Image (tube, rainbow, N blue to C red; front, side):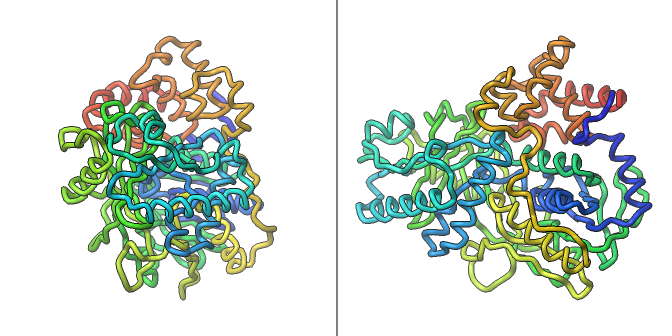
Length: 507
């Protein structure tokens, strides 16, 4: 089997690990989330030599626990932060029109005008939606992709979201961007970086970061090794302070519930349920008929866990948010799963909900460049800013960022994607590579077997050969999201484990 240039797998990992420990990289990136993968891609695209080290798996941390939105920053407009809202709108347009059309889609979103929403608040919200559409236009995202907002009647609102309560006086309809899967975006970034020569090494925990490199441990063997570098970029998210104590964070927990959208009567249109002015609860349809209900914003104290737990208070709060807009109350028995992510916010006085979502790039006294804050939508801008600083600190010779016009693995125009000869679900996950993934099942009937939803055995093998899969958990928890519903994840672990083991043996 010959590797694709963008392939990440166990064989390439071994080669890259040996080469990284034996040379000097221009940039070492710590962290394999969306920001770290974005930094690796931005630096590699400028012609720099790059090593990325991730303690676990790609998208292991916060990057797989988002709302899956590529949003234009309406919340920031409501707070008067026009700059951050515009940055969000610009980066949303980059993702949806140039770098990742295959992983994004337009999401209709309805603000239901329930009796608790005053006419004044409705008018202010509509004004905010119109202002947000102005940012969409300034970012040159076409209205054919994200249509203009408008007010709809109660009858039309119920047609869009049949599960809504019946005492509506209408709704405010707008459109935003949605990711098919946040973890899959990270994988695409890492593979694209690898195609440009970056060495992407997972299961490599960085123990110490210095001006001239890092010391790390191979989690598969327990062996320690050093990687020398001209500059180190710390993109470890909520764990960034463990490497650079000068960086003090106040993590904020964002919780989502997983529910059956068919039972709720919410299948295609998202709901933005007003909680207070400028703050909304979200009911977000997902592929496969599920919905995510979010989003909390609570400070977290103490050590940062690998996988945050969901407290009962968050569950109660989110059930109340959903029930306030729906005809039938949502009960605990309706909760199929739940997940929480931690936002890496810089420490500052005040409540976590009020902390800035702007990102920051800081240089420690040791000379390590750290990038923190921000949000998924603006990962590319964060990465470009971090590499700009790293280039100066490391005295590196290269040009400016080119990542805004660099398509990720699988990307193509929406017209080209519509012509790919493969099921729509595959195209949404793999873009133009979907035809190759589909062909695996045509060549080998076992690989065409459906494991859950529309996911086939061939996708597991593809993940081992091309997407850095090393364990069953990489598939169940990150390359797919079947593990969000524990019973469903447990039901397929055995067959997935067998497929992973056989595919690894065949490398």
